[in-house]
Image 1: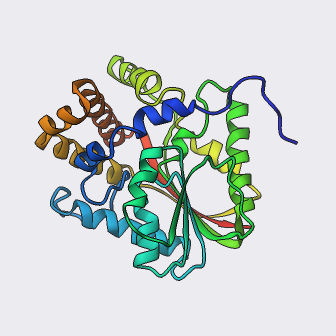
Image 2: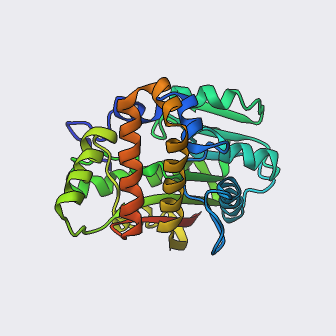
Length: 293
């Protein structure tokens, strides 16, 4: 039985769009051609800047294999960003159709420019999505951090993650793969700089969004999914953030002309925060590979 809370349980849609509805032209400067907003997979000694795009595609290929969706009939991407995962799965790995969910209207606009008829992008929450044809596999890549309201009591947060996994479970075929990439925060050794930076993330850049604890996720998935793998990939995301900061620095004047100094400074600060908190192991970035029971 699901408990109905009197107040909100999700971050405000406006808070999500505050970050993700900055113009696509701006994001193209920051993220580069792949438009992939997550860490990549690079070899030891490989130049992250020079091989940024290759590392992003390498990561997507690995996730597609882990989810076992090569040649699949239907694939779901929850928090699909600019459609790069689904485009890769359908064009390169033979998946026949992909559905992407996002709250960003500008991301859907970008996906339409991919001219990939195998992709259907929807401005729709994971809570509201239904299907008559269960999916063969699913992804949620660095989107889960935006799904639960940070002000909820700990027990209610865990219930929300359980509800998330219940919803995903209902959308997948038995035996389907589900691959998550998500940051987590455990007990943090607070200092003045970290405290100020966390306040900035919580109150200004990602207002109301809760970075989960790993225990909340494992409790939420219990009984619904078999856990195949949990792997911490902190530096893959930190390295990507450093590359994006370099991209932004190289075209800063153009970025300011598009979005203004305030937005550019916001992104510079938040990307640096994510980079150093991952490098210093304050935050984690877990790859979680699951199989639907």
